[in-house]
Amino acid sequence: MNTIPKVILETDAAGYPAKRGKVRDIYDLGDRLMLVVTDRISAFDVVMPNGIPCKGAVLTQISRFWFEKYATEFPNHIISTSVKDFPEPFKSRPEIFGGRSMLVRKLQVVPIECVVRGYITGSGWKEYQKTGTVCGIRLPAGLRQCDKLPEPIFTPTTKANVGHDENITFEQAVEMVGEGLARKLKENTIKLYSMAAEYARTRGIIIADTKFEWGLNEKGELVLVDEVLTPDSSRFWPADQYEPGHDQPSFDKQFVRNFLETLDWDKTPPGPTLPEDVVEGTTKRYIEAYEKLTGKTFNTELTY
Image (cartoon, rainbow, N blue to C red; front, top):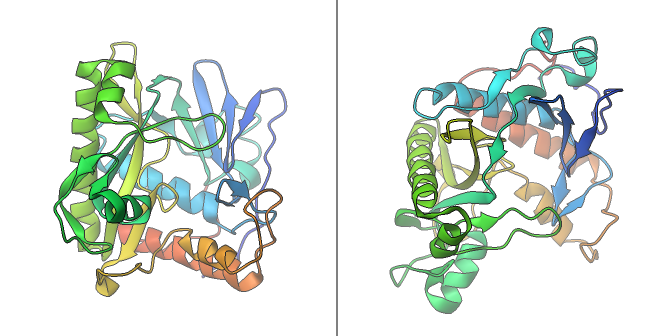
């Protein structure tokens, strides 16, 4: 691996209003947005005081890979990921914005997180053990932890500005956005997940579940937005180690969560500083996910 670049926790573009999320900084450019993925990492909805080198660049490059791969079937909001196409002052600060930023069209975002599950794990597994359902959807009896589901299921959630997203039923989604749009969201979400999961399996990765966000253009057509199929928005498992019946090793930030679970920490801010071995291990997992999916070597000397 190349020399690890400086960790980018904060960004600034004087003259533009910015919205700061747990991981991303979003700059409003009028009819466009600049989405900047920092190296911040959150767990249990708390941002850790130190970040993960390369994380923002890896997530951006993975999203770009998927956006480009399925652009024909699923139009997206990207204008450019190249610094040379960015407006000032972003263009003149490649050391901050290069490799980790996307210039995108501003669209009306549908207020639903479109979650799709192909395997039973996480909160879904906990619910299934109690009720035999996942987000209210009845599943076959006798499933083991991390078993593949008979078919992917659509389990939408609300998009909370503060606090946790909340699971909603498909019927509740219909009430929020109308039956026609809700059915299209479900159809597109399951179709995109199925296509990506089939491809990822050929690259040695199981995509257990993921979430998508969709926007509407001026014609009322669905457009894929936000991040896509990254280790932050998905569960990625190594296919060669897959064994249902217990938790799986992963390429996502579960490595950080597992460390935090060993601490006497009440999961409220401020978060604990991550030790060097956890930081290095997490960087390694993110980069490995990128390289497996794309077949390319990740260049830590960010290309602008």
